[in-house]
Length: 169
Image 1 (cartoon, rainbow, N blue to C red):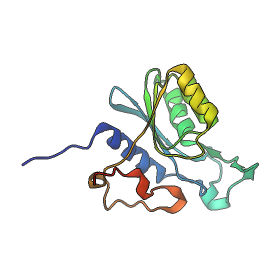
Image 2 (cartoon, rainbow, N blue to C red):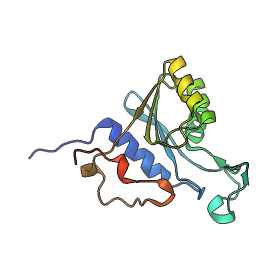
Image 3 (tube, rainbow, N blue to C red):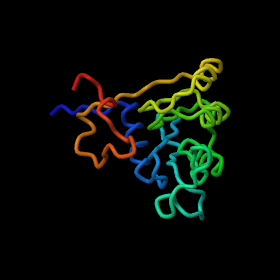
Image 4 (spheres, one colour):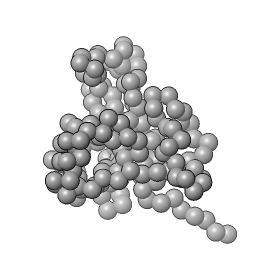
């Protein structure tokens, strides 16, 4: 019997998709997985500070178009590494959406060398310039439907759309 294993990039992005299901900000569900040497070292999703109320319970606290209550998925994953003393130097991050500028700066400062993202989301030109200047590579991952059929993801909040899948399916 022949069995085809899921490619690493799709496996780790699948982990980020699962993490996004824990998001508590109703504006966008995002998940992030930090990987070093093909091993998951941290994961995060967008949500409130521990002990605070959640957007899904109390509504978003929006100022200038941004939810002040939410910590982004990338930040939560990096902070998890900091909290538990796990180095991020040379790691990779898999994010369901293109990182915002503040998250990009944090990713770069944390020493993460490769950013994989699933969906374009307000891709910032300066973020791209910083990635290029610092030698960090950025890669958009496309998923094969054969690995991601019948999953409990919908298209609500821009989570999954048909354009995330490879054409060869």
